[in-house]
Amino acid sequence: RAKEQGRDQHCFFSNELETTLLQRHNIETVLREAIKTDALEVHFQPQIDLSNGKIVAAEALARLKHQGSYIPPLDFIPVAEEVGLINRLGEQVLLKSCQTAYRWQAAGHRIKVAVNIAPKQLSSPEFYDQVIDILSKTKLPAKYLELEVTESALMHDLEATKLLLQRFRQAGISIAIDDFGTGYSSLSYLRLFNVHTLKIDQSFVFDMLKDEQSLSIVKAIIGLANALSLTIIAEGIETEKHSLSLTELGCDIGQGYFYSKPLIASNFEQLLLNNIESNNGF
Ligand code: C2E
Ligand code: MG
Ligand code: MG
Ligand code: MG
Image 1 (tube, rainbow, N blue to C red):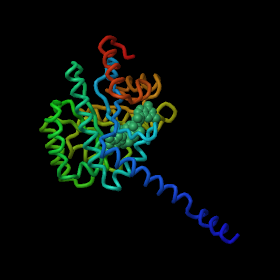
Image 2 (image 1 turned 60 degrees about the horizontal axis):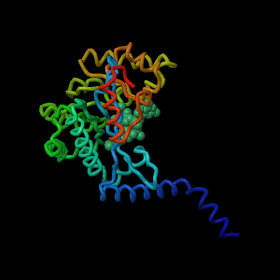
Image 3 (image 1 turned 90 degrees about the vertical axis):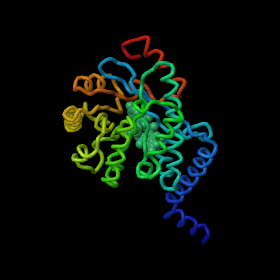
Image 4 (image 1 turned 135 degrees about the vertical axis):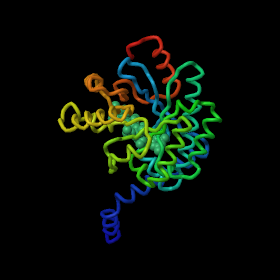
């Protein structure tokens, strides 16, 4: 009885913590193995030119398969960051993305690939050389690569980041700010850093048709991007209504389940073939 009580008590205050630690430990094990055996997958989600419905780019999204299903990036990316695997993960994703994008180029599709870069990758001294090396290995022209970074990653070391982004720009690689509007940064960094693209965070897109404030924020971000001659991408477009509304507001590019979920490379290539044949989306 006492033993039982003890166990109950134990469960009472540490059950949740234990599950989380166990899950994290399991994810780490699966992730280590995937990186070691080069088994990480990359899926691709189309980005659509809203003026003509054509695919102009693809966002590369890391996928970790375990026992027939996928562990979400929101679960394994933070683990990768914590246990020091994010640089290797990022390098493998970048390599696979550039290899795949080169195949698209070779097949005559002039579209970009956008790859998510974690804050730790951006601040790693080897990162610039790693990117240039992968481009030369895969023969992907630099102008077809876009690096997606978050506002918080940019704010880490302003001077170093500014120089790094200048070097990327000189090399012909473009930079997008992901989840724009959710970080803590001030707008002045848009002047400091030479970025090409703003991605409106999906939370504003989800709410823009039912909430005036979200709509105002979307309008303001599009206005800001236009004033600074930046390309603007809206992500999280799930309905035709959102698509039409964003097109009307002057948004350049759309991404979301309305057009397509992220796809394995061969399915994405199928979509690209349809892209040539028809002019009005899918
Ligand atoms: P993100 O970069 O903002 O990517 C967009 C996320 O929104 C993706 O989730 C995508 O599948 C999802 N999404 C796209 N369209 C829609 C839509 O219409 N509705 C909804 N509800 N969701 C949509 P995913 O693939 O689960 O990735 C989540 C996050 O994980 C990414 O957010 C990114 O921050 C991170 N991530 C993914 N792959 C990588 C990677 O290779 N490296 C790093 N550092 N982070 C990654
Ligand atoms: Mg992204
Ligand atoms: Mg995002
Ligand atoms: Mg984003």
